[in-house]
Length: 271
Image (tube, rainbow, N blue to C red; front, top):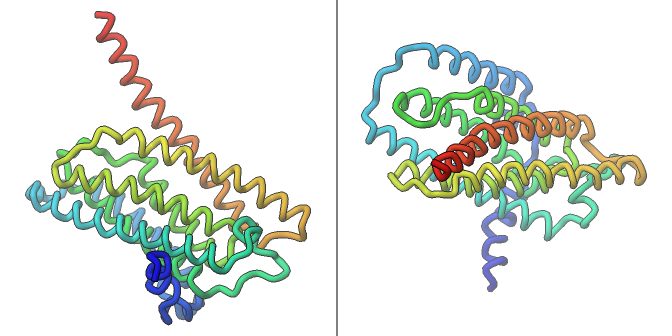
């Protein structure tokens, strides 16, 4: 038995994965009210805690919590990326990677939607990132608008993938989860006292991911307007606007952080 077959047995052929069905009334976190409450709770809690003088936790305890949190998200990101890749390549026609036909959208179940649901729940788990930053007052990382905006809006985006059967979500999920393997690997190493020199690579990969997503969207739009329509187009509209705003913010972050460092390094050499 090959490694791919073994992975498939665990990640797409398990009965609970094969039989998964997205139902807003019964699926964990599936109701719009749950989504609204989760985002509102995150924003209000972040606002309050960021302005309170929170108790200083021992740095060793914070590093342990951060390491465990990053390890869990790293493993989840790897499993989601592998699960959706295997499910897509084993069951989807190539065109369906870009466009679920509007006239015959996929049933909201099975491995693809199972891992999309795990992805959605993982975005709720990522709220812990914010709490760790707030509690770690001595950290070099600071709570930014980009961080809070990303964490709150990405939950809505991932919910819409499921609720609208959005075309392109398999590609979006695989690429985003793959980047998060790299990102949470970086933060895991930082939490255990190793600071890798490739932080910029993480930001560069995030920017490349957004550019690739827009390129794939042109293929989807061709199918939508020239081949009878694609499912979940309004979910895609939200996704595209959100990604465009993130791309702008990430490019701005990249310029402010790395361009300034290059100028300082060049000035140091000249002196």
